Amino acid sequence: MAINYVYQCALPPEITLGHYILHRLRQLGIHTIFGLPGEFNMPLLDKIYTIPQMVWAGNTNELNAAYAADGYSRIKRLGCLVTTFGVGELSAINGVAGSFAEHVGLIHIVGMPPISAQVRQLLLHHTLGNGDFKVFYRLASDVAAYTSILNDMETLASEVDKCLTIAFTKQRPVYLGIPVNMVDVILSSSLLNFPLNLDIQNRNVEVEEEFVAAVLSAMYKSQNPAIIVDACVTRHGLIEETKQLVERTPFPVFCTPMGKGALDEQHPHFGGTFVGSMSSPQVREVVDFSDFILVVGALLSDFNTSSFHFAYRAKNTVLLFSNHAKLKNAVYPDLELKVALNLILARLDSSKIRYRPQKISDVIKPKLRLMNNVPLRQEWVWSQITNWFRAGDIVITETGTSAFGINQSKFPSRTRCISQALWGSVGYSVGACLGASFAAREEGSDPRVILFVGDGALQLTVQEVSTMIRWGLKPIIFLMNNNGYTIDRLLHKKSNAGYHDIQSWDNLRILPTFGASHYDARKVKTVGDFLALIEDPKFAINDKIKMVEVLLPPMDAPPALMEKWLLTDKADSEIDGRVDDLHAEDNDAFITKRIKLNDNRRSIVDYNMSYDNMDSV
Ligand SMILES: Cc1ncc(C[n+]2csc(CCOP(=O)(O)OP(=O)(O)O)c2C)c(N)n1
Ligand SMILES: [Mg+2]
Image (cartoon, rainbow, N blue to C red):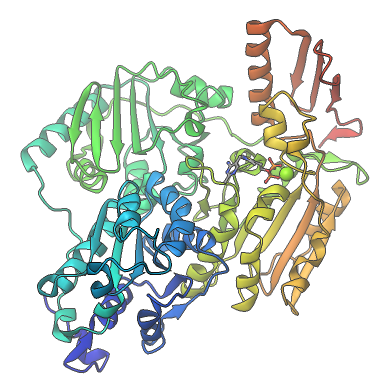
């Protein structure tokens, strides 16, 4: 159906290809574009400034730009990254691969040398000097759902439309190369009056109906059902549909770490976070003994499942992946998540469900009140911060201990969560925080963007804090300072190895160093400091950029990670017998861990993690 976009925007009858691309992005609600300029993309960038609402973010490097576009996309369902040929695009490729792995919609536009230079195989700068202008395009193709170079005059507009449609509907990166001489080719603006068709194509209705009938029949019969919500629900914008599923079935529902933010965790059916064998006993009790499990938006990565340690007893497991589905052993290729979920809702007759709800135990442990002078520890910090979150927040965590800590929290309704748990590229969260902050600002309600980043991770991508300041963005950054790479210290037994150390920075000076004049920077060391912080109503307002340096012990981690450490050590000790004494006691408020190693190269770790001054309220 035609719309009157050209009239609304007072566009001339003819526009350039560059304008066409940017207007298409604008029609999808994409107003911020990330990347760096280069001579092969500047004619395109010039046009951004001519279109109302469009913003060129201008990042400090292409890797951060890719992370930012990914973070933006996780809120808006599409991100746009523009880089220059060779040097720019290769710097971005780690971030783009992350978007590919994690099903994030991204359009990566690469400004290429003019076609004439390519045909003559000139030894241009940014080439490998061998006349091969397609080498980077080929490299990109393994981490893209679709790749295209705009060099055919006949198909320019349709090719742009195809790229955007695939990126949006498949939620994967698409690579779009534009030779610089093509950017000003003239097109009819009336093409913009025909909106992109974002409906799922090539559906097989018979197969879909057969699948959904089988799913529902298993669901109706089930005595011990469970629903697990995973990462791809948010990617495909299916939060509302998932909510309906939760409302219309009485089943207990769980999220995976990557699915956090896709569910209303305050809903009475919410049972907690499912992390395979690392889940809490209450969660395992339900999930491990289910006879019907429906995983919505499945990604099932190692981190989501505690390295694939999950013991569904389900006779009937239904996995709704992004672009296909699985029922028991049968695979339904090309059955899109959106289609499958909507059809389940359309055909669901709740009166046929046999299961009668049982009480779900609360996942959050009671608050612990500690003496004010007690030094901070992760378990306590994460249990407190959960009470500080509020509806609408966008919470971002980094690969490292914070990705585990966040699973301890129970979010208020409508909290959104960003983490890159599958790809796990350290430093991602800082770029993603920039992207999410732009997306948040575009929402109008200006939700809080809260970042938890490790001291190690920050050092990889810290420059992007400067872009936040440049644009007056106001994230609240918790810098978890534990003197280096704690997660690696725990997961690898050589906890004292020098390669886990980092240069310590004067972190409170980061914001002013990057030019912030209106900011809040503080350090918290003790329980008292932290309580004062989260009880301060002024601190809770996102009126300026804030950084809180949270000082934590180098060998401390959230309980789930400590348990993983313990399990790994135990397994290792069984293999090589080098651990003389491994002993752990664990109750709610007290963990003691003692490890003696008989390897002379390592010092004895005698690590007592108990809180001496702890008393429960
Ligand atoms: C790009 C990249 N390089 C290296 C790694 C390996 N790695 C995983 S976690 C980590 C350290 C994170 O340290 P920090 O941010 O301080 O978090 P902590 O665990 O101390 O809370 C490293 C280096 C990675 N995942 N990604
Ligand atoms: Mg650290």
